[in-house]
Length: 409
Image (tube, rainbow, N blue to C red; front, top):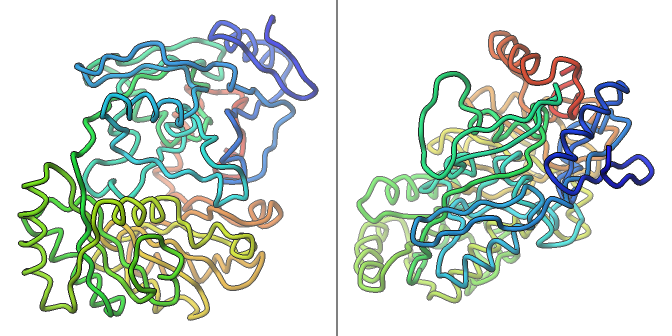
């Protein structure tokens, strides 16, 4: 094994060294934590591993064809590097990945492409463009068997057997260590604007967002920011309850849709507009969950709850009034910061979600808490059995990120 070794860390320099490292760990029976820059290390159950396989040395864009809307890069490539390259060509990552660094007390712009795919990241545009898995075209990875596998390529294509891209996206490094990744990129919108409705309560806001999403206005972001939290978002003219709808595209189209949406929403409350600069600032704050990034806020357990958009407001009524929260994806995604340090009240959260349908992930809590409660949504028996068979197929010895998602898995 030629990869550079540090105390408790293996840092391969290329894909072959990743394979060598996994084979060595397999032979030595030493479980591996798979990490890039470690920006999401605090999400999931605490590590139950002997060594860290640090993939940050696998960095660099290996293929970029703007005309073909395709980019390939090594898994440890910083997202900031990719986004700068795309910006220079008036393109973007349409899935708008969240930066978990500030939420978890880390630095900004440290996430990697591999981490974004492994966590299936997304942002406010998921309502229109999907998450990372929907832009994931191809991969080279090393399984827990020490075998290199490849799937997909520069076009979307179905193949017999596992859809490896769909399996690996959101697997949190429990199935394979990705080394090279190919993604779809898209042109950046010429401009954007936001239609803002003020003064709505949570239920009325969800109804307004549902009306906007059911219209022909092609909304690319829909969020409700209650009055107790609105002051933390950039771009808002006043710190009051704000229901915000983003429109993106060519200037004439955005102008037309803005007027159409305004007419549709005026029955809900006072309507105003944010210009391009205000809109970009606002949606950056939504994307980075800014209210919950302050030092004080970071002591509070943070939940990411996905429910049917029409029932998002019911979560608020089922949880203690002292919790802070806001709604993204037209109310389908609810960010909830619980009121007391270190106390996630998992039973209340799981009960509220079960009542309306959906799932909840404990994004932030002390290690002792994450070891004692389900961080990810508990699986039904049939799904758990299927997941066990997939895990055994890729990683029969439980070498890669054991216990990261569920105890004993």
